[in-house]
Structures are given as C-alpha cells and as structure tokens.
Amino acid sequence: MNKIQVNKLIDKVNEYFSVDMRDKTRKRDVIDIRHTFMYSLRNRGYKTAEIGGFLDKDHATVIHASRKVRDLILVERDMSRLVAAMDEVIDSYILEEKIYSRGGNVDNYESVRVNLCRVLEKFCDSEEERAHWLSKSHISIDEYKSFTSRFL
Image 1 (tube, rainbow, N blue to C red):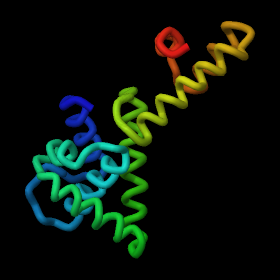
Image 2 (cartoon, rainbow, N blue to C red):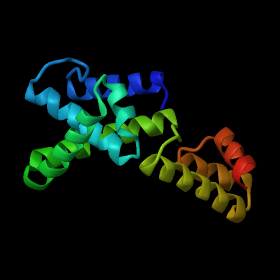
Image 3 (tube, rainbow, N blue to C red):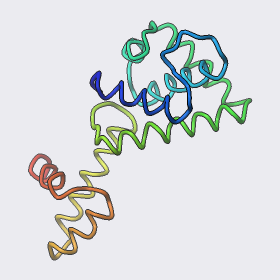
C-alpha cells in the first residue's frame, strides 16, 4: 500500500471504531484498536518496520502488539471480536480500493480473482453469461480484460 492508501485505511478504521489511532494516548480502547490494527496487518504479510511507519511507531512496538493480541485472543472473547471486526474493515477497504500488493489475504484475493477469470474465459459460452458472473463477483469488464491479457 502506498501512503495515500494507508492514510485512507487508517481514517476508515478510525471512523469505524470512533477513535484516533495516531493519538499518543494510553487509553485502553485506543491502544487495543492500534494493536489489533498492527496484528491484522502483520498477519497479511506486512513487515514490522513498515507497519510501524504507518503509525509512527518502531518495529519493536509492532512485535509487542502482535504478540499481545495473539495471546489475548485465547483468553478474551472481546479481543477476538475486535480482531474479527478489524479484519472485516481492512478486507472491505482492500475490496473497495482493489489493492493487490502484499502477502496473505491480498495475494490470495488477487489469485482467486484471476482464477475466476480463467474459469469464465474457459467455460462461459456467451458474453452475457460472462458479464453476469463478473457482476456477481464484483469484477469489472476492464479488470477482467486486464487479468486475461496479463495472466491468460
């Protein structure tokens, strides 16, 4: 993700959870959101220094946050709900912005879309049928053409 995309994602998370993750506060609700954000990005394959740069923290803070969230998920039901909500916010942003750049869910997301285009190319008999399935999959015609020209 580039800086603009990261800032939009952080704004979306801040809006969804009604906090400011960039705030230097030690309030529990803000810290939990910030740590969960770091944990979710870490699970998507982003490097600790990269995640730290998103929030003006260093890599050790990201490592600590990821470990803490990982451990709390096992014992606190609220933390597992928070992680699920954070993942939903991040995934919806990735879908909206069509970001195909980094490990984990994002790469899998692109490969699923490319494979779907392959299947449609092979098995759809008509343009109408292909258009129907593309619309159901939230893939635009331009995106389909881009995938088929690059990967098929």
